[in-house]
Length: 174
Image (cartoon, rainbow, N blue to C red; front, side):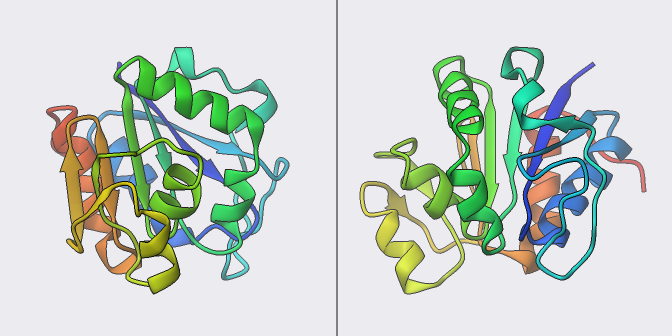
C-alpha cells in the first residue's frame, strides 16, 4: 500500500492539510498526519487536529511521499523543524513524492534550497514568489514537475489532492 505523510504544525491551513488526507484515503492511499507541534496542533483557523505521528518519531524511509500544507505561521513552523528538513532531503534524494501548497513551496522548500531550478507555484504573494527566485515560478494553480507537486493555495486544495492521486496512478472514490 502507498503511504504518505501530511505534515501539520500550529498555524497550518486546515483545508490544505485535511483535503489531501481525505482524498488520498478515498483513493486507497495510507496517509498519516505528522505533527511538529505536539499531539494536538491547532490550525490557522483554530481547528485542532490529532496527529498520528510526532515529527521526532517520523521516518521518511517508511513513506512514498510527503505533503506540506501552507498557512502562516504553520509553514514557518514546519520550515524550522530539523527532522522534517532531513526527511525532505531524503525524499528528494530518493525520488519520493514531495508535494507542497500555498506558502510552503516558498517558505519550506525554496527557503531550504530544495527546489533550485525546478518548476513550482505558490501562493501569489510577492514575498513568497521572491523566495522561489532559483526556481521557475509558473503562477499555475497546480504545477507538476516530476516528483514535485506544488499548488497556489486553499482554492486549489482539491486539484492539488487529485494531482497527488494521479501521481500514484490512483483515483479517489467519491
